[in-house]
Length: 212
Image 1 (cartoon, rainbow, N blue to C red):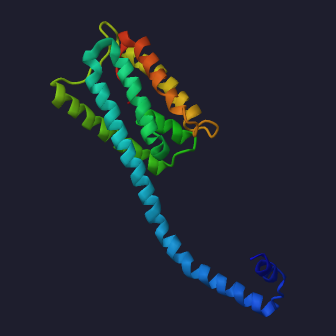
Image 2 (image 1 turned 90 degrees about the vertical axis):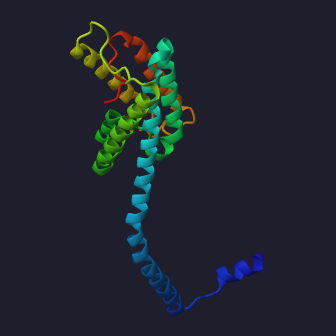
Image 3 (image 1 turned 60 degrees about the horizontal axis):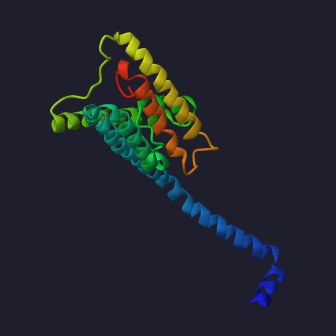
């Protein structure tokens, strides 16, 4: 017990013996070190694969709601905003829950995402969006309502989408990509309301869903 601990602490160890122990520990570290370094790319690859799978699933489910929510009319923004909020909770701790090329670009410009990850995120997000709208077409028999409002010029509609996409991106950067708030348990609630507000405010000028 306590007496044994005291003896270990007070026992004199000759310098030669201490050096021998240090050498044995160093040799063990050298033996382990190369294996750790050789396994590092595999670990990094697995981490990126988990992030990309999360982005694929999250984007697909989120955009599927967009593709199918048109017929429900005024409730569509509520469904879309709720879907984004739930998907953020689902994948935020894995991939950051971007589900949007504009968000990924903003996170990259802030230095929170590498160039390889950025390109990979874009590829997965575009693939998931294409699959989601294909799924929506097969289920409903018509494509999603991604077009300007009646009587609205294309440039005007794109300008409205740009402004609200910028607003959503600012929210993401200051909530999900900021150290002070990214681990907060209710931070996911911040993503749905901006999308809901944007969808309602720009309903007459609708083009897309604030995502390229």
